[in-house]
Amino acid sequence: MKKQRKKVPKFANEQEERRFWEQKDSTEYLDWSKAEPVVMPNLKPTTKTISLRLPQHLLDSIKAAANARDVPYQSLIKVWLQEKLHEH
Image (cartoon, rainbow, N blue to C red; front, side, top):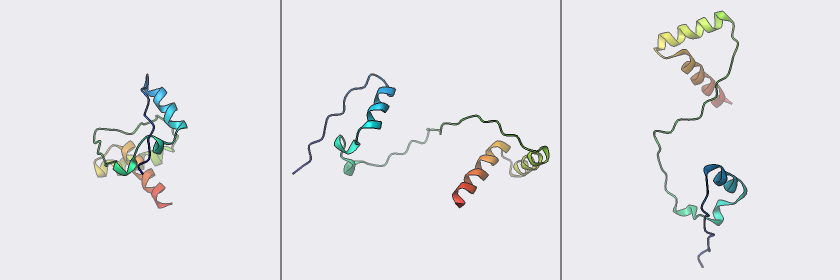
């Protein structure tokens, strides 16, 4: 017998929808076995600006490494941080 799913309510805004899904089990509303993968190439991850104090010689070395790779130094720092995280 097919499981009866609950109807997804209409939401006034994104915040209301977010609160709803934080408290509910989506399997009561959606049949995930019928879900299909979707590619959203224009989405960019949310970024947060931080302040990071580095010794001048370290920053100079990072900028030189970035220049040799022809990439912005902040992008290179992000790549290195991501790589280091994946090592663990």
